[in-house]
Image (cartoon, rainbow, N blue to C red; front, top):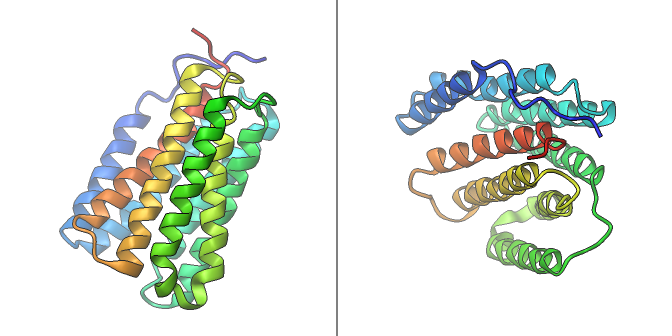
Length: 230
């Protein structure tokens, strides 16, 4: 297997990424809508460029899949900016993120461990149980969105499951980064769904965007380091 470079460049990326995230969190919290809307797509765009530069040592299929997943995430961010203007944009954004999750799943299965451990089955049961609890909490408020939400929840749970199944097939650092990123993605979307369909969540923008940005970064960094060994 190819060995990933330990010093991922460009070194200016993380400060830039954190700056964009902080700008978005401040803009959202204080309802500076222009600042929030301008910074949000730049977060994923910066991550997309970062991976594009640093992921060229990965296998070509993994590189293309990850670029595509980040691209569809970026498109999802852009589309959801306009959901207040039309509910159609929410559906389009959901489809974009659904596509991103499926691409992440395919990426993770490239390092699928054929030996299912006891911990894998425990994680599988916990994730499915959590997904069912969340869905049954939301279902009465979903209306025509019930089927799309079922599909989306299934996809994001599958993303976490396939992320966990990489265990012992990649470096320990990579495994932990990707799986933690997947869990943060679930947390972000859960808060978003509760805030949208059930009850307002205090500091929802900070919680949603904070966990979302961290999730995308951790997954990206995890894939970049999947062939490094200590």
